[in-house]
Image (cartoon, rainbow, N blue to C red; front, side, top):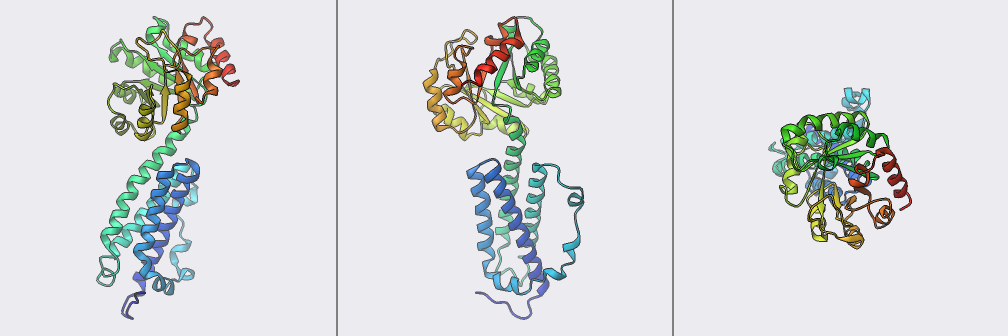
Length: 357
């Protein structure tokens, strides 16, 4: 154990001790959120590794730090921050507060490690490296938490407003009927119209969804999703790579990806898709050249992919229970609702069948 000379200033030791504790406490909180709130094992492990690295880097100071600790006379102990006095409002605020606490503490130790008395024992560059790592982990954890509430909508019926299937009917009125039936997630899809024409329609549907606590997902068009501040984006296998789409989207937006093979599903999972759409489960007339994968493919993907699965393609009242029993978290439909005269009635019947799955 390395001991310091009597000339070593006590104040520096106390600053290192206080900030080491603050950093460790902040990291432990973030680790617990990753572990228990979102169940993200890799992210949890990264926070744990940071704590262990911090302990390893400062273990030679152990007895000296404890020897000079004087918590009873710490004038800062009674000073509360404005955020503490007002109270935290949500989990994302707590994540920010604890990440900043740890980052500031790491920076303090990083600077102290440059002093001649400490530089032989502590490596300033190591604390700088930990600090920059934490910046990235904070972003990842905050992103997951902010998207978690949106992901809670992916447990029921997912209705795709395909403007070609609507054939001129009012998109806003159809969306209103769908939402009134209890649907919480709507996708707007249009493969033919120009984006200038689609923009005002998308904005109106987005406003309606926002007022109704429903999500609006834009199909394919990243720029349109950004323009109207949609809740998320859905892409297929022919769009820009998922990591690029994720990078361009704000961190609180969700992204889904269509797949029809196990390898595509696992790749989408690894690249950060919030949900994976599997299909076509059955033959469908709403998508040209659709590849029919069947119920068995859905079951196979369910076994290897933990992300929420949205089944799509030819699903109706007669088979929706079968699809849910195969492991789908949600079911996306088009003609099963849009082709019906009674939109709300059709949606309610499907949702009732889903509960029997």
